Length: 270
Image (cartoon, rainbow, N blue to C red; front, side, top):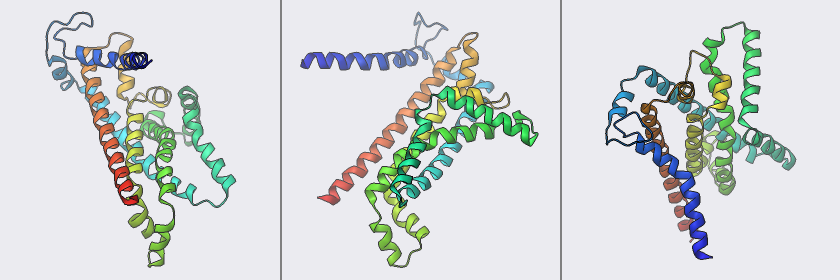
């Protein structure tokens, strides 16, 4: 049974990571081939850094991911604090359930509903959709990232409780000062985890971006999808490798900070 569980674990990890390893491996291939490895080369990484179209898409993706992650983190942290302070248990459960709906919704449903909303909004405001493209994608990405931030921050707020905030207010702090000086530093690991999760979700989103996006603002997933109609060039393998490494580093930082915070809390308890 012990060997069977190990074999099952190896099989699962192989299914998950062999495709990623294959992509990274062929990003260093000297030739434009996914069947034969002709030699180690940084040719495709050089081409990646000299492609204006790819760099524009990368810039758009990073701007969108950072902006939506910041917005969703600020709104989500405030929402988590507000949900915790609600007196009515029924209202708290209802709002928590409503908050979780975007996570359970299929992306295609969220994307279509967002598209219809923005088309109607553009029609009412009588503006060109292309000029509204970035803001439409920013609102859409913030909307679907928000529940994940709340899910990350709310348990931290609940674990902290209200005693420290009340003590700070008894000593003369206003509610706002109490939040920023006492509560926020203690829930910061959850806030950072929520930000990283929102950033990574926005970074690789395709379905919602496809429905909401405009021709004037193209992200990397949309650019790669447009290439699949012809042929995906190996510089995209190089770009995907860089994104994978970046996300891996961010996850390591997030896990390290969370582990450090847990060890600190357990040390205080002892």
